[in-house]
Image (cartoon, rainbow, N blue to C red; front, side):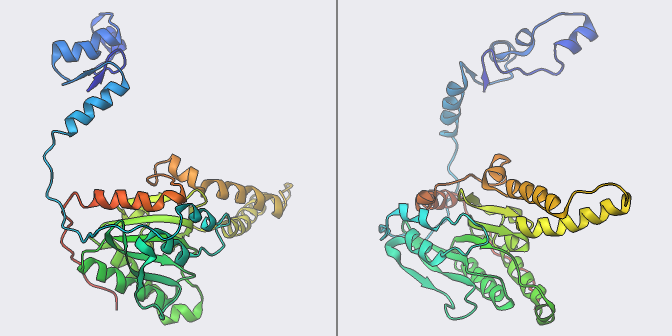
Length: 333
C-alpha cells in the first residue's frame, strides 16, 4: 500500500540520480504512488490518504486465513460485583507504598470470586485462579518484598498454570528481592532463579499490568518486558526502573561526588543535596509510565477502570493461535 503524493520508493533518490546520470527528476516522478501503482507494479494498492490506506489494510487482513485457535476454558461471563471506577482508589501515587491487590482482584474477576493457591503460605505473593469475562486465568500479584518462600510459591503456581494451559495475569508492584547475609545463606538467589526460570519457560499467554512500582530483578520475576509477555500495560501512576528514584539517587550521588573529588579535589563541587536532587528528578521522570510508553517499552497506559475490559479483549486475542508445547527444562534445586 502506498499513499498518493506522500509515499515514495526508489533505489536511489533524486540527488543520487542527478549525480550519477545528470537527470533531474522529482521524488514523485521517480518513485511516487502513481509510478509504482500504475507503471512499475511495485505496490499493490494506491491510497488517497492515511485513512484510506488503513481501510485498505483492514480489507487485506480480512482475507487472511484463520490460524488454528487454542481451545480455552471459557464459560458464560458474570459481571464484576464492584463498579470499575473504584479501581481509581487503588492507583497509589507513591511507588513505595503498598497496593491492595486483593481489592483490585475482587474488582477485576467475575462475581468477585477468587480461589487462592497456598493462601496461608508466603503471603507476600498472591496466587490463585479466577475468571475474567468467562475466561479461566491464573493471577499472580505482589503483596510485599520477595523472600525465598515467595519465589518458590510463585514458581510452583506458574508451573501449574502451564501444565493446565491457563493464561496468567501478573499484577506488578514490587520493590525487589530481600537482601542480606541471612537470606543469601538461605539461597535467595537459587529460589529467585526458580521463579525466573518458570516465567522464562512459560508457553501460556502472560499479561502483565504494572499497578504501582516495578523495580530491579523483581520486574523480571513478574514477567516484565524482557520476558516477552503477550501484553504489558501500565496504570498512569506506575513506575518502572532498575531501582527506585530515592535509592538510585543515594547510590549515584556517592559515586558521582567521589569521582568529582578524585578528578579535581580543589574544584568547587555541588553539595550532596544538589547532586541528589538532580539525579532523583531525572530518575523519577525516566521511570514514569509516560516515559516508558512513549518509547514503546509497553503496550500502553490504561485507565484503571478499563482494566477488566482490556483483559477480556487481550484474552480473546491470545486464543487466536495455538500455544507452544511446554518444555520447562531443568530447575535449580
